[in-house]
Image 1: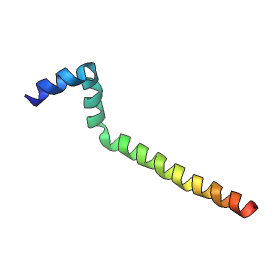
Image 2 (image 1 turned 135 degrees about the vertical axis):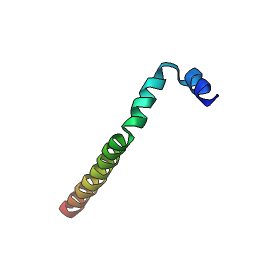
Image 3 (image 1 turned 90 degrees about the vertical axis):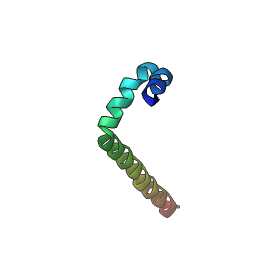
Image 4 (image 1 turned 30 degrees about the horizontal axis):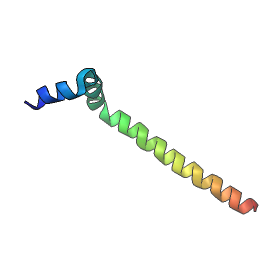
Length: 53
């Protein structure tokens, strides 16, 4: 029953969600790595700007 509802609600996106769930560890690692990279380098730039003033 749940599969029927998901097929109706997601339509053609169902294949994309299956691909995501199969490779979820890879995608989550990329997203978390990118977020950590942005946090690390944004704080480094703020520190450089503060020290320049």
